[in-house]
Image 1 (cartoon, rainbow, N blue to C red):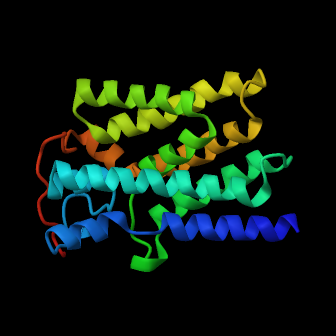
Image 2: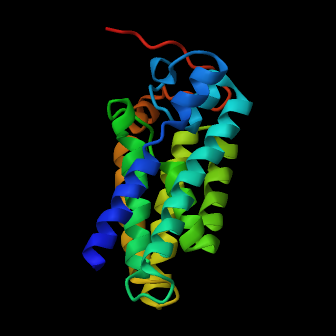
Length: 214
C-alpha cells in the first residue's frame, strides 16, 4: 500500500511541477515562447528579463505554488501521523523540481527548479526556507546576479539543514532533500556558472535578447 502511495505522490509531484508556468504566462501576455529568449529557461529570472516584473511575479507565485501543493498533497495521501510523512514530502518536492526542470508537456526543456524547490521547502521547514531566501536576496542585492543568489541560496540550505538534522531538530529526510535538490539545481546552473566565471552573465535588470538558432 505504501509503495502505491509513493508512486501516486511522485507521479502527481512530477506532473504538477511540469506545468509550464513561464510558457503559459509568455504566450498569454506577449504571445511568445520565453525559451527563445535569454538563457532559454522557463523560470522566473528569464521571464523577468523577457516579459517584465508583472510576469515575473506571476511565474514566481505559480512555480512556488507547484512545489508547495505537491508537498501538501503528499502529506494528505500518507497522513500526518505516518512514519513515512517526511519521506513522502521529500519525494513529492524532488519530483516537482524534476518536473519543473524537465517538463513532459513541453519537450523536457524547463527551468532551474529554484522557486519550485523553495515552495516545497516552505511547507517542510519554513524557517530554513525563509532564512535561505534571505541569503538569496542579499546576494542578488549586492551582486545583481540572480544565478549567483540562487546557487548560494541552495548551498545555504545544505549548510543550515546539516546541523539541524544532526541535532534532530529537523528530520534527516530534509537534509537528504537539501543535498539532492541542491545538486540538481546547481547542475542546472552549470551554464550560468560558466558565464559567471567568464564575466558574461546577465545582471538583474538587463533585458534578454532573442536566442540564436545556430
